[in-house]
Length: 69
Image (tube, rainbow, N blue to C red; front, side):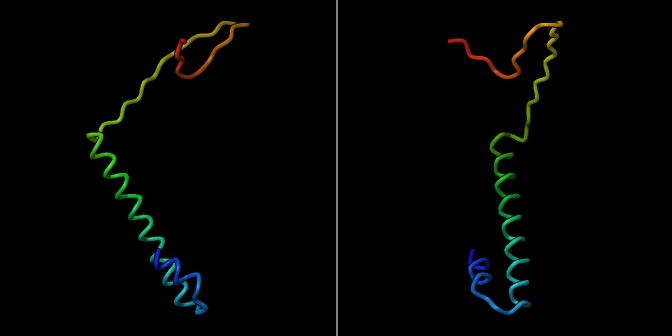
């Protein structure tokens, strides 16, 4: 965040480019760290459920989870 603040108040193009590139790298690293932590907490597994539903002509279908109540 400090790099972004310095980028905002800087008038030199070379320094602004330096701050921008490093801010992007740090923000990308932060996102990767958060994703890795999420995978670690989930155990690295990902579940995908595929269901096939056939709807005849004139029929109506709702796609999604339905909760009766």
